[in-house]
Length: 209
Ligand SMILES: C[S@@+](CC[C@H](N)C(=O)[O-])C[C@H]1O[C@@H](n2cnc3c(N)ncnc32)[C@H](O)[C@@H]1O
Image (tube, rainbow, N blue to C red):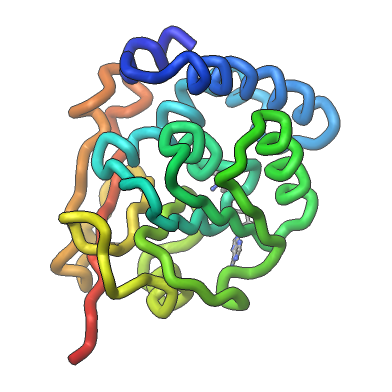
């Protein structure tokens, strides 16, 4: 929790208490099914919560915005972002039912009214989202194919609607066909070594015509 207080000093008491409770809920769930690896659960705030919130350092979601988290697994980055932006709506999708069950239980346990989850492959759902967020699901060309019809044309934000993807390492090959992609180094915002190679890739939506 010190990391949350250190990097996000302006949270409300309600947000702080949700972030505190989140650890308890994930630790309980991890005894039943392995939603977070054993190693990572001890560093839940660093590896999952603060990492997810890296997206909020790049883009503040305005009230009323709609966000889709693709391949959310146990709820990352969607759940931490939903706590951070209570006036935005988050749809969390994953193709594995037992992961969605954990997402449902955690969001209910935290009283998150702005989270809805779907047990589907993302290719099967439709929607009109301001931003699509994700971590560790697919390479960019596949991901773009899955989500490009799901991004709203009207934007509530100054930055164009599009994809905000948490990635690591050298992305030059993977992003070579995406000239409009912007890469934000998370080490700019967070000093822990874990973030040295971590980035947020922002890919604005391209509109035809
Ligand atoms: C490596 S896990 C990452 C989970 C989470 N985003 C995180 O970073 O902790 C990848 C997740 O993507 C989901 N997934 C893969 N392809 C998908 C698709 N086409 N539609 C929905 N979910 C998908 C998998 O079921 C799995 O839970």
